[in-house]
Amino acid sequence: MMFTGPPDVEALHANRDIQGLLEALRYGGDPAVPRSAADALLSIGVIPTLTFLLDDVPPALAHALTAADTRLLLAGLERVEVGMRLKLLRALVRTGDERVAAVLHACLKDESNAVRKHAALHLRVLHNADSAYALADALNDDPQVCWHTVTSLRGLCHYQECIQFQRIFQRSEAPRLRATAARALGAIGDDACVQVLLEGLETAGEGLRRTILIWIGRSGNRIAAGPVLHVLNQAILYRDIETMVEAIFAIGRLRDPRPLDSIIALRTSEHLRVRMAAEGALRAICGWRFPG
Image (cartoon, rainbow, N blue to C red; front, side, top):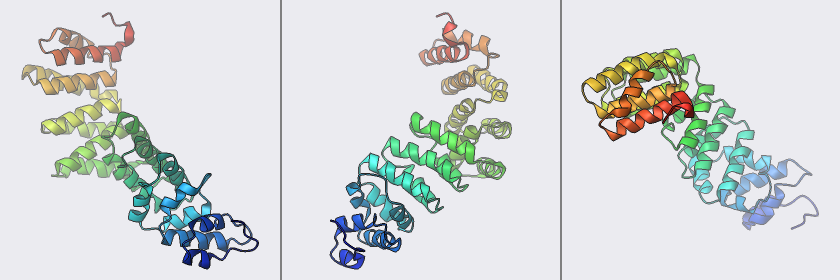
């Protein structure tokens, strides 16, 4: 459709002329026209119509979408292919509107790894402090997504957010909340956060203890090497195989050479999982130079 003058957005809306409204988004003669067209598309379910767009989402449409009901926006996102959804997310983030954060939080649970990864990255760009909790909840994701989630969480968490996660971990009676806080503290990984995790190891139940050890390892903070070695020695004493394996993995991730003698000794363990964990930890600490 070629417009010889300003498009009649009301008529296009009344006729549900989606193609005409999409073209009206690009009308440059009057900035009010693209805004009206965006509102019209939004009111009739604009998201599926994004498949008609071959290039970047027009700014007028992106601004209009931030005012949409989040559920409508997400329902529409599910109906378009991943490449277009990523393009839409980029356009929404460029608006700088803080309400976009709610959409990105929901996208952290999207079925597509690519969408989840980009949602995590975009949340760091928005620098919305409230996003720290949504990111913390997403830390048990696929390793590729998790890495970007950790990066964004570290960029967003400052003193106040760290204190909040510490309080949740120390005081909450809800296992799921404590586990989420433990992942967040390990992802942040500074001395204070890791110290709180180490203090919680003594009283943690089996499931939470496993989470703590995983995220102490992922913190990369070597102040934990001595205490984790102590946990490993206690697990050996009580023949707690699950804790032994997770403590060995944590030592490997920390890449601290001080517990090397203990790990080398475990290469001859009667338990296959312990032997495999010890081999992996030695490779992580020494690299491939370690003799097989």
